[in-house]
Image (cartoon, rainbow, N blue to C red; front, side, top):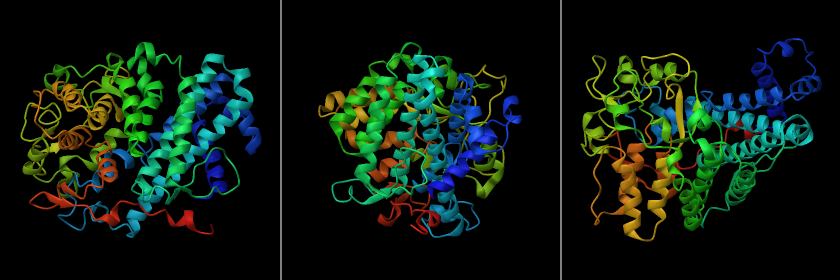
Amino acid sequence: MKNNHILLIFLGVTAILFASCEKWLSVQPEDRYTEEQVYTTANGFEEALNGVYLSLSSNDLYGANLTLTIPDVLAQYYKTNTYSTHPFYSMGAYTYTEKNVKSQFSAIWTQAYVSIANINKLLENLDTKGESILKPARYKTMKGELLGLRAFIHFDLLRLYGPVYDSADSTALAIPYYHQVTSNIEPFLPANKVLESALTDLNNALPLLENDVVKALGYKEQNNHRFNYYAVLGTKARALLWRKDYIGAHQAAKKVIAVSSLFPWIVGSKITADLQNPDRIFHTELLFAVYANSLYDNYNKYFYYELANNILAGGSNQYINKVFESKAGDYRNTPIWKVPPQGVNFVVSQKYADIADKRAGVQQQRNLIPIIRLSEMYYILAETEADPTLALEYLNSVLNNRGLTSLAGNVDIQNEVLKEYRKEFYSEGQLWYYYKRRKITSILSALPSSNNGTIPNTAWVIPIPDEELANR
């Protein structure tokens, strides 16, 4: 999408986001005047930042497309090939040229770059006006959040649309990286240059967030609803792992688990005994999550058992038993996967089903979609640790907090990490990127009756939308 188009969309999105503000209703529609109205008060800056987070929670991004549906369909978590009428039939078959599939990928691309434009516009005003309007501490943390978010979104675009990253193709052209809102069309950069820009943003964000309140309070007071210091560190660990800088990824992940008490493991009774208001997402463990108002509508749209053959589900009890190795005590298994009263005769996910207590702010897990988890940092440590004894300790730390016993010392660590990614990240979009990073083509799949699936090598790179390529 051309950047001048992005700018126009930014202005439209901004108008929508601030439509509820009384001051906004009184301003004239000229673009410059509108911008001046927004960035004249501390509240205006905060509202603009809230607008960025709202855009992340949209269905085109982390409210659905990048979490609940598309990457998990590509990872063959769900049986989408029983009937050609299934809404994700073509996506599950990697038919990227099909009209509806192209439209979905285009929506991700467009909304992601709209969000980046919003971030860059806010950063621009922050640098020119922010220090005189905001308190110094807030100026720093806001800038840190924004730089972190800019890196985070670009990195996810790289993971989705970019090449499989290794020495052979890390120099292949991938995506543009926008550092500012400009009328110029930014060029496509090689994957390694995109990653370098993302890591620069992340490294610049960390010192700005040095006094982030999350370092004292952790997940409390909804600190994991925003891109905090540990969300930046977690993203850095992901990015370095993608670059195959295993030492750097290990160091970043280790800094997070050094303060793991700030993001405490789920209390077992909250998932197994609280039947009215279970915490199926383990919200205290989340380094970063998006608050999605549309979450329960999307649950009904994609996962509700009355959808029958159009449901996003494993398609058989056999498949789910293989994923969870028939371990009923796993908090991620039987408390979440249940046989419904009608619709289908196999277990379906209730991970995002609504809870009984809908009072605002009472049940902190409500409306949240996990984006970065504490457990992922342990998986990164296990994958990158040279000492097999220590690697196993990292892995067992997660297992013991999922209601499971420790693994024996003679297991294949990398295979166990793979199995954990399958169990941990349902409806969160991370398994596909794990497969792509490690170029795993033979997988456990919901599609064939044998559950032995294959990812074709042609599936790894998502095509750039036609409208982005036109007239370049």
